[in-house]
Length: 158
Image 1: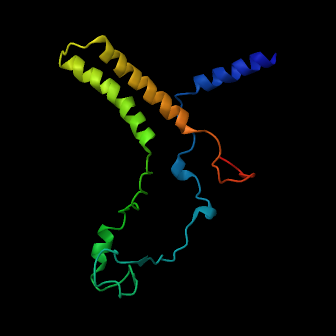
Image 2 (image 1 turned 30 degrees about the vertical axis):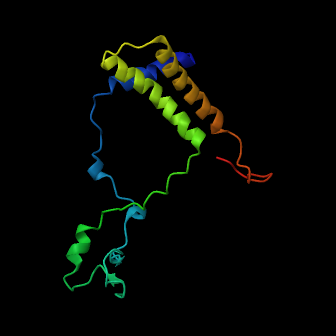
Image 3 (image 1 turned 90 degrees about the horizontal axis):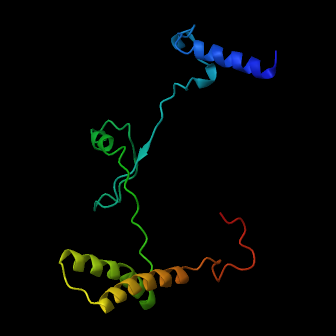
């Protein structure tokens, strides 16, 4: 037999046994010992929220406390509050004008078309030129080189 015919026969067997049931049920397979977890309970330290005044002097307490205060912590256990985002960078006048031109030109054309205004040729040219000029200005100012303060060796740049 050729290698191609052997491969074809294997594929025929796979296709023929596609709807067959498995010989062993997954419940009968033994559980590996390496997957067993230790029986020790885990202890967590829960800190109070920072925004509440007067609670800054309290020491951290265990979540296993039997003081009756654990029910509040259980409600907020899975809640994640991300840190506030960093402020946006300050833009110079040329970048602001480029953004205004990029969105202002098409916005003017859209408003004028929806309001059925009669548009002169110079107004159409100005709106299209503003869009193209804003786009080109933003791309040119984008810069793809390394930062000026990086030195001669950037290390591993991802």
